[in-house]
Amino acid sequence: LVLHLWRRSGGSSRARGVPALPSVPVLGSLPGRCCGAAPSPALHTDLQKLGPHFTLVVNSYDLAKEVLLTRGRDFAGQYTCVLPSRDDIAFCDYSALWKSHRRLVHSALSLFGEGGRLQDIGKFFVPPLSSSSSSSGNAFDPSAAVTRAVTNVVCTLVFSATYRRDDAELKEVIDYNNGIVETIARGGLVDLFPWLQRFPSRSLTKLKQCITVRDRLLQRKLDQHKASLSDGDGGIDPRDLLEALLRGQEGQKSEVISDDHVLMTAAETFGAGVETTSTTLLWIIAYMLHHPEVQARAQRELEEQVGLERPVRLSDRTRLPYVEAVIQEGLRIRPVSPVLIPHTALTRTSLGGHPVQPGTRVLVNMWALHHNPTDWPQPDLFKPERFLDGRGGRVSPSCFLPFGAGPRVCVGESLARLELFLFLSSLLQRISFSLPPAGPVPDLRGRLGVVLQPPPYLVVATPRHT
Ligand code: HEM
Image (cartoon, rainbow, N blue to C red):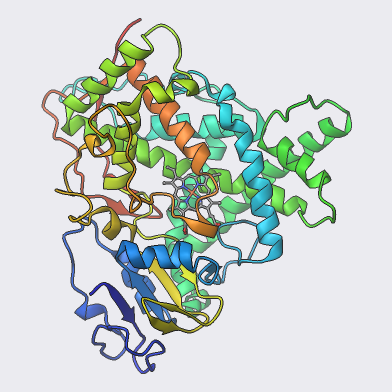
């Protein structure tokens, strides 16, 4: 089936004629769902199926294009959370205010287009000091070091703070962000089953605590930025995202963008930006451990085009097509968001020729798009050359949508691409990754939390030059 409709038992099909799985009482069509060759348990789609909403699941590029682009505005609604609604982008509904907030964030993020503040960011990646163990040599789990490095970069971008490895404030940011990421999937359960709120939920309590710590820290940064702006301390260009947003707020004709919008944008840059970027880097390192020839080729390209002495610049991007192809293939083979944030039909519309009622949710299965053997021969193989044309040029098929598309496309796409490029190239310039002597290769099957993560694995990081 290209397009499935799952419905709650007892409900009548609201999109008649759409192929539907047979359903049984209470569990709807869950037992009948065919499990594909996807390496992860599809908990995310399973849970969403159980919700009290009509849900369409889109598994093909043609239908995804219809949802995201051709009828993008019809399907630009978000599902309603029972968690208190805030002025963010990802979970707010499509409206004039939301559009103007999104535009402001987009232009504030584009200020980082030159990547000036991000030179040589590989230096933020500091392997643990004592990572040796007799059985695994100098091997360590890279996830904490990658998360710390990416968080540090986001702190620089958002409020101009760059921390030392053991700084207490950096630890606070990492801890609350991890807490939110870990609990939000369980918090999501409450969104699907509002009656769960009646029961004490440790996850929900932890989520709320982390949000309080986050808001306190970001409010402090916001107040400091406001004070320095009113003291006239700002230069011609805003020094960071908070300053860019505050200046944009001043420039609004009516005061629509509130302080909470500014605070939530900062929060979202961490919430939506750290886990996704770190996880993509962890997947790429994991695949390079499986394919040392890919790492060697990327390092050769870096040596020939940039050398090992000076930091990689954003302007080197055009001269490093293979490094870029490695990133693209990482985003394809393990999309961190294998199913897009649910879209909701805002109006009576149609999909694949079938009528769709307002309020119907649509899940776009990015995994299916990125593993369709017609578009991607041998889709389970890691082959960066897919994104090269054989003459050194780049190709990017239209069915490749790691950041979504249309009105709700990832607002941080250009920032994320810039970070991934500078991180990976800067890391490969200074470090070679290899497997521990007796260590297993990383498990590539993936675990689904808020994003699709690689299970923990060990790596040895050998400096290339001192
Ligand atoms: C939405 C991917 C990094 C902010 C999304 C969506 C995807 C995605 C697939 C959903 C699009 C849709 O539903 O149609 C990624 C990946 C990233 C990344 C793969 C890194 C490798 C970032 C960063 C930011 C960010 C760095 C921070 C500025 C957002 C926001 C949304 C979003 C705010 C919601 C947009 C909306 O609903 O209008 N992202 N993202 N993302 N992303 Fe990202």
